[in-house]
Image 1 (cartoon, rainbow, N blue to C red):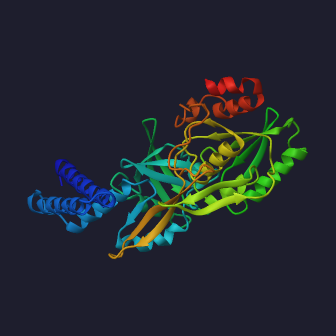
Image 2: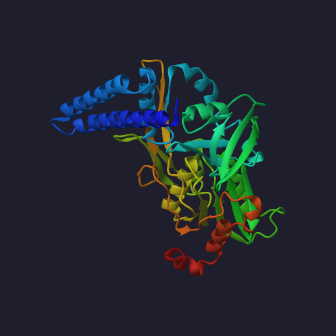
Length: 403
């Protein structure tokens, strides 16, 4: 098929997707208007008309199943990056690899406007060892272009058996790279406490069942001191690093937040009302001053923790905007044998507002060098240095935030 014909197919699919999306919106509007049913059926009629015209008038023969499948994918793609439609013939592969998640690659990939990109790369993972970085664009995987590939297919490949070699073509700042990623089971990163400029820096690289206990142990170490942290002097200040931390267990984030705050910490909110309320009745384990480092790779549980500490302890957020999604996905079996993964609720902070948009830092520090080659990286860690300065220079805090 020629390039021109392919473009025409994509435009046709876009039209179908638009009409289906309009139909869904019409359903929602019908609950609030008397003529909603008429509007809904009119949209369905137009959709059927366009589908019929494409089948009869398009230059090449078309397959109805392919057109409809493309429409399904377009509908969920318009919702959020985590909602997926899986065709019936791909469900078995999807389910077989779903439990592995990013545990074989350490690479969280999402798509936006058809472009696949790395949202986060776990420390010490095969993806990190292969030199993949946040914001890298994945243009090809296993010799196939990622633009037309459904997201579930990309994730299935990245969750393959240990030892599988995944060949990627990536772009970073316009520079093409060929990468070989060897999938493997690897130890997940834990909690790490370091000292910088006399301040404790707590790195949370993941949120799993043992994270709250690990954080509590780190806080005890911070208060009592240890020979491994000889320069620690500002024991009433803590810098929490959540940059590039995506995915994990959302409930664990509330467990960690309970070490710093008490009372209602947040909820799991569906369309109509809260499904679950998260609270802490214990005395906060830490009551000192806190600043939190975030960036575009901060997502999910990390955003929950940042939100709770911001609202309950007035913690300052430093860095760049977060990703903007902390939702719960539900799997729905479809009558055609396919599978729908759809966001059915969002987690919230104490203000009960859903975390479905980026967190804005109090002190914005842009990392314009993200994605540059190693030899072009500027010295030091700009966001970390600014976070430390914010904690140490209390007399200038208000002035910094105002700026």
